[in-house]
Structure formats: structure tokens, C-alpha cells
Image (cartoon, rainbow, N blue to C red; front, top):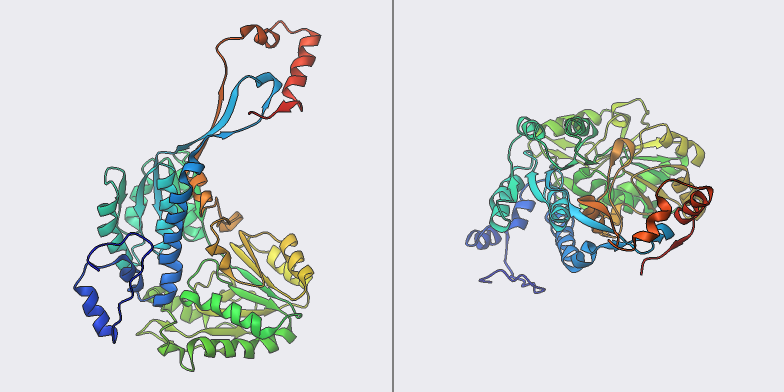
Length: 454
């Protein structure tokens, strides 16, 4: 307990209450995890799952595989280049700007940072000013562990971000809303800077009549109300038949009570809204449709109860913007085809979910729609798999990251061909003047005939 372990050893220290835990911590240096918990948005365990563990796994994966990722990648040659060496070299872009949001302030800063460092870049980090505790600890701790000549943390709000974007970077990675994403993309375009945009949107969740409503309710409720609904890949609304809605509502009520108790406001497992502005915005959405579950709020705590809305019309505000809070609208459709049409008439979402005991229904939803990610009969557990990329499509973003995808995103893939300085006689064929036989032979050598570089 006197030094940082930096190894696969986890001591457990028992305390009797919260006050004793605070006293114990205050006698030591403030840990990174404490700041992640103290934003008063996520519950402690949710913060550990979504912030600390995933970031640790990302670092471990990069350390384990970096030598392999960095290796030149040999590619096939044709007969025209048979005696040459063809390969792809991974090079850093140079100076990268990473702009992170407030909802997962550690995860959404550190995860891309790991990929940028692994690829060999220098990085300017811009954490969100809304998550003040994490912003503070990142500014204090990162310079202690990263070379300050290569990595910098810039604090401030929209004005400071705007000033940053006036400068030329070699790559920009932005996570946030489509509205701000357009501003970032316009700024990047002035310097022809490549960019990754991790945006949001309204993620549909289709629930087929052929499924167990309680199973669906358990899974949907957990993913919808995780971090008080402030998750970009959370299901934003449910599409189901009127009959399924009548079965699903009591099942959702049962799941909410099981997860958060009879009074969710007192549950340590339910987070709070990030600030007053978002709290007031969410309060306004509670007036849409009819409240079937929840609907309570407490301005003093920025608390919004886990809420389910029914009789929601697609023209209402709750269906026009990303909710980003613990509110779940149910919209009725008469068939799978109608649900598919409903989804395809809107912007492509960052995530899409489908629940059914019939595998053909899930497959049809997958094949007939487009989204950044897709979950069949579950929520966003795919985020725990570094072998799967996270990224949007269309209005929900461009580019992808996580695991090796992060390394690839922050690497320039340089095409290389190394030829012999000798054997010039073999090149006579490609030099003019071109005869009919020369043209046919060159066309053949450049075409389907190829050999793998050994």
C-alpha cells in the first residue's frame, strides 16, 4: 500500500463506511478512479465498468500487440514487380487533436489517446469543461506520466476549442454531437486535415411480438438507464406493436424496481444528469406522450427518474432529438416492415438493436438497415470487445476505433515498393516505343497474373 503496484495484484482494504473511505483516501494521493466517480453522474460501479476497466484493457491490449501492429505488412505483387518488395508501412500522422465529451470523460479521452500514442503521434488533448473533476485530474496527472514536449492538455470551453481548431493539426478525433461535429469538420477542411467523428443520434430498438417481454425489459432497461441514459449508443426509443407495448410496460416496471428499488432516487446505482441545462432540457421532454413509468424529477439533485413514455407521436420533441437521459419512448408499429421503413426514413443511427426469438427477424433487421453498430437480443455489450470497432455512419459519424482499429485510425498507411537497382534489361519491355507484343505482354503482367511475395 506504499507504492504503485503496476502489476496483476489487487489489494482489498476494508472500511466501515463512506466517511472512513474518504479519510483513508485523503491521507494518500488522489487516485484517477476517484475523480471519475466524483463527477456525480455515474454510479461508482458503472464508472468502474465503463471508464477504468475498459481503459485498462485498451492499454494492456496495445502493449501486448504493438510490435505486431507496427510490422510492415507484405502484399502481393504482379509479374511486373515480381522481383520487388511491396509492403505497407504504418507511420504516425504527426500532431493529433483529441476532443472528448463529458458523458464518459475518462474513457472517451483515454481510449483514442492509447491508439494515438501506439501509432507514434504527439497529441493535444481537450477534455470537456462540463465534467470538471475529470478535466482537472487529467490536467494534473497526464503531464506527470507523459512527455510534455509531445503531449499537452488544453482546458477551457467552446471559445478555447474554437481557437484550437484554427491551428493546423495532422489528424483530429472528435466525439460529441452532430451539430458540433459539423463545426469541427468545417475547421478541419480549411487545412485538409483528416478526421474521425464519433457522433450520436437516435438509436432504434425493435421488439418483436415473438419474445419474452421480461427478458427484453431487463436488457433494455439496463442499457437505457446505465449512466442515467447519458450514453451515445443507448437505445433511444423502442418500436413495437400495441400488443407488445402492453406486455412490455409492466415488464419494464418490474425491471426498474428490481434494479433501482421502489424509490430509484435513493439508489446508489442510478446516476444523475450532468448539469442544469441538460436537466431542464430533459424535464421538457417528459411532457411528450404519456408517462407510463417514472416521470419524477428533483432539480436540487438533477435527478430524473427512469421513465417510460407511451402514446408518443413521431413529431414530438422526444422523437426529434437524441434524448441522452433516462427517458425511453415507446412507439407502436404494426409490423417488422413498418419498423424497418420507420428507421430507414431517418438518419443512420450510431447503434441499432433488435429483439426476437425468431432469428430471421433479427437477420432481416440487420440486412435491411444501416447503423454504426448492431445488437441482436442484447444492448451495447459489443463495446467490451476490442476486436469490434466503434464508429458511426452518415449522420452518426465517420471513422472507427477501439483496439487495433485505433492504431490503424491514427496511422498513415504508406504504400512502399522497393525495386532492385540492377536487372535493368528486364525493364526494356516497359519503355517506349511500344509494339503490339509489348502492349499485350505488359497488360498481361499487370493483370490477373500475380504471385504472393515470399
